[in-house]
Length: 99
Length: 502
Image (cartoon, rainbow over all chains, first blue to last red; front, side, top):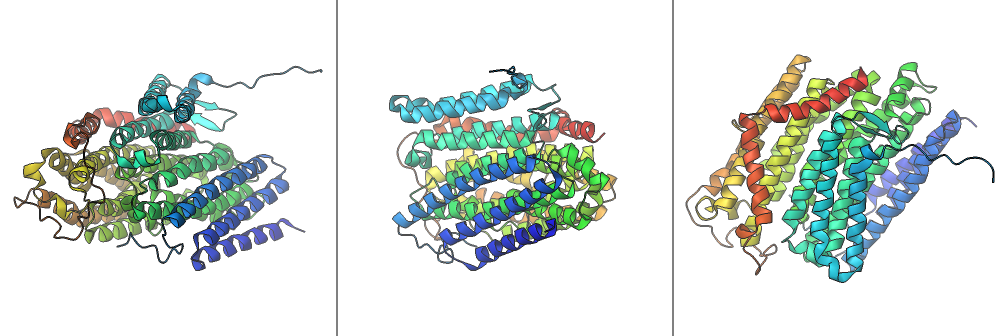
């Protein structure tokens, strides 16, 4: 297998995540799609890291994993806070702010 | 056990600003645990940021790669970091009387603010892709929380969630772009090494690099709110607690533009011909959309959000020219923008605590009744509109000068047209304030008492609020008349870029 396959797979994952983010309206599912997009970036980094024999890409992937976890923690925290205040969990129905 | 242990060489003196912030951060978290110490938290936050600022001034002359070249301390990072720390200290003072901090617990609020400042300072020093991504998230994630801290209002939670989703979308795009650049440069993460890798021609085709440049541009455009990636800006500016808006409007732009300059002018220097046109188109879009969007707003915070989009377009011009002069002009403009925004949002906080409204209509008659609101707001609006004798005017002059030098005359014309458009909404605020009629209470449907803070010291006697507002307004005028000290300060950033690119 050549590097192209890995890059194409990463690009596809990224596209799936992006499509999900635009189509789905539930914040929890949107967070999942964001994870997919970060995962796509991580996969591409790993593939290039293996291709070039450089380790720094793998370090960046480790950091991405931690950062992705932090993002989800904050996101889920916000979702719980909204749920407790009976704010609808649908980004189309949250429109306190617009204009 | 055989072998000798060799400690890594770390330049602790050059790292001292980051160390000071980290120690302050830990201390604040500890005060949340030991409840009697809670009252010390704001003091600790200001102290650690002031110590960090002191360390930066101490390291002003240093130009060095730190931690195996991951971080770089030079004129660019020290100049931008100092401005970010000023924004951070003022934000703590603004938030001291604010109710949002009390709802989540004062130390928690301050710890978030301080870690955001830490991430921003680290981002100005970022010299490789790893720190670039890490620092960007380090400042963004606490900001998402800060935006959501006004738990009474559904709008605040909504702003937090919107910012989180769109901000993370920006980060994910940025990361994918980084991966492409990493591959295209042949496995390099250091900014200078990327530039060398790109000149040599990586293993993979140029299209990969172009794709990467495009995605990194989009990712950063999300962070500095450049159209068409700006949709979150007005919502978040309006929904977030006003002290947080005051902080993020200036500081996120500072941090993101610092790394924008370093990454595009150092790492992507060999590809300048590819990205300058893309950025010029984005700048034009931003100026058009930001100014047109601001025209119809009734909420002042929302209007300043759209104005921030337009201003980001002006600032982008400083990157597009790809010269040291451009970076100088960008830094000068950012410093002026920071002062104008701190004055405007400070005055707005005073106004909100008295009337509970952030609508432009509620400012009617402020010129007669509340001078502490009207004067700083007038100065800030004239500055943002770019009228002499304010620093905003000179900032635009420097930007246009840098553009004209590099044959970007059409972009300079776009900036001038944008400025003329912007007069309409900035001067509307000034006109409303100096109208003599008393404020029509509740008539415009925006006065809902949401932001009203009753009891406590009246806002105009709150020195933590009044002193920064006055200093910021005076600075806008002072640097408009005597720009030399600020320009010399800003030109340190341009010199740093010049010494990196040779």
